[in-house]
Length: 217
View 1 (tube, one colour):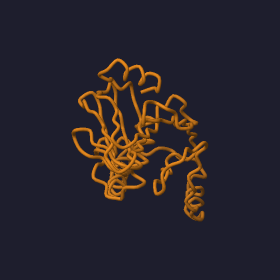
View 2 (cartoon, one colour; view 1 turned 30 degrees about the horizontal axis):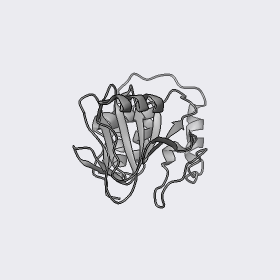
View 3 (cartoon, helix red, strand yellow; view 1 turned 180 degrees about the vertical axis):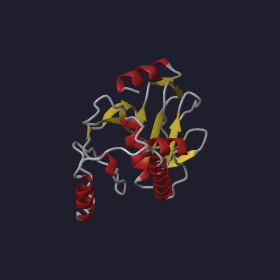
View 4 (cartoon, helix red, strand yellow; view 1 turned 135 degrees about the horizontal axis):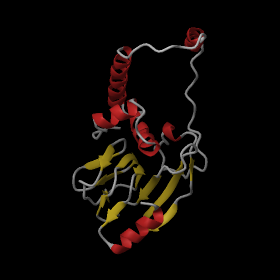
């Protein structure tokens, strides 16, 4: 997997500080787990945050804080857990589910338009989080649109071009009101993306706006 598009430092810093809302944090985490470059960048930002914490005034700790810290250090490392997501719709061979989705539930693939399907991701601790999976056939495209809020997209399989650049498996895209585009799935197979949507996509056409409202986009 050759990853060419990454989240900006502002998003990684907000993620490191725990300041991202649930939906964008889930999509960004899905990118980071597959991207060595962003893993290294996130570690650096977390270290920088640790240095800043050291400069804060000391705070009182519980009497057993040190003992619990040593207990955690001595505990055996747990093996990575498999992705445990309820209702996983099938993916093409070679397209793994992100571990960040562990604990979530996903609806079946639902028809949205010819050659286009979607599934909704339910996050147990934040039912209001707007996270969707899009599955679009080669040659198909989303209608032209901009955004009333921030949209983060992680490509899980296939590729699309939106007039700005081509995004393939592993790539990450952030779009907002400054972006007006039309993602077109490239030849060679369908494209599957995980996306978080804040606000709504503002489609140019009436029919697209109606379908977007039904899907929750």
